[in-house]
Length: 169
Image (cartoon, rainbow, N blue to C red):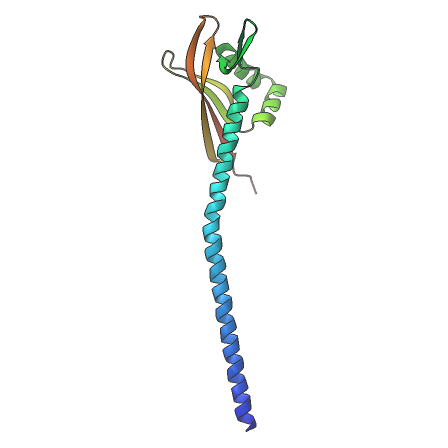
């Protein structure tokens, strides 16, 4: 009689262990599926943050005093002075302090004025790229480019490309 009780107890313990193993396997599979599907959401959020960053930097650059058109006491916010933009690029490339300042404000980015219609030229305003780029986000804003020498205005896109990079491990 004692042996039959022990056999029954062993069978019940085996059944309990089997049920626990199956539950643990189901939980692990559930976690794997959950993290697989939420991993895509993290990448989408990262892309949104990068897009918002490029848009905010585009607005920042379009409102920089260093690039704005001015004349007769007026200041226009959606206007970039062609020669100020060219001079800005030269100063930032040549002056170490200016380069450090604008790298802290703007970061890894390329900023260009893409002239449309009358003049098909591109003016690089700022350029600072990381060594290894993992992704880039581009924002464009229409602006007026003023040429104070010829006293003509041209339509252009202020294009800001913000780079993301892979940090070394």
